[in-house]
Amino acid sequence: PPGGPGEGKRRMIAAVINGLVSLIPASRRPLRHDSLWREWHVDAGLTAVLKHRCRAEQVSMHAALLAILDQALQAALGKQAPTRIDNPFDARRGRLAQLKDDMLFFGGGSFKIEVGRERGGDLWERARDIYREMSGKIEQELQDIPGKYRFCEMLRPPSEGKLRSIVRLGDLLSRNGNWNQFSFSNLGPIELLDADAPFRLEDFTLSVRSFGIRPLGLIAFALHGRLRFVFMGEEQCMSTAQVDALERVFMGLLREQATQRRREVEPEVALAAD
Image (cartoon, rainbow, N blue to C red):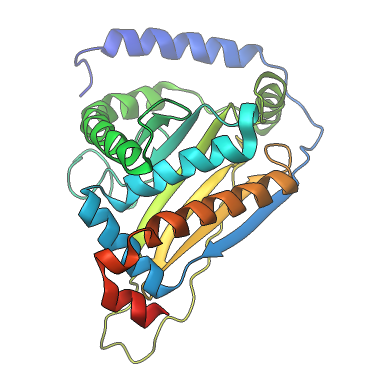
């Protein structure tokens, strides 16, 4: 609430940021956007086996996919890999009364996981370590969101010209044009229609656009029991060859880890998938 703990500090930091942004010259030169958009998927049988494997290993699907993505980024990009993965989540669900139900905002609703850290030799040990870290970070973020929301209200939105300059600054100062950050969004099962609806949803398409930053990340969701991944990025962040390498390593690790104990975890599902 206004005047609550940390309000004075937030106002001081917001004033400094507003002052710095006011000094940035506006640019009229259009930004170059070379978008990359890919979709990867696994069949329903393998998706079911992966869910059973996660339950057997006592981790969430999100933590398992994060562990796989962490290893894949290191293997595919090496020293050019981003330093952290940002994980947006829906912070509303009735928990934050000061947010409108249909409101999306910049000030919260995500947690960051450092990548490239030593978390144990086994991928599932890595997933359990990430799972433990996630729980604390989500709870902390939920506590911090109201203050972040108030803080964002204090910031003056930059003009389009200034945003162009800020994006170019990111191109110069970061290794990948994205401030060395990779986003991973997990939308979960997509169920837009009731089971008794007169028609069936056959496909689902995502579109992500950003003017203030160069988008770079992966979106996961399941449709009709089939796990799908949408990669979004720009060649200024990752080249086509790097995206191909990431897809190859990520999907290879996912299939390997899901099928490693396939017959042990759920033999009847495995046979149906075959």
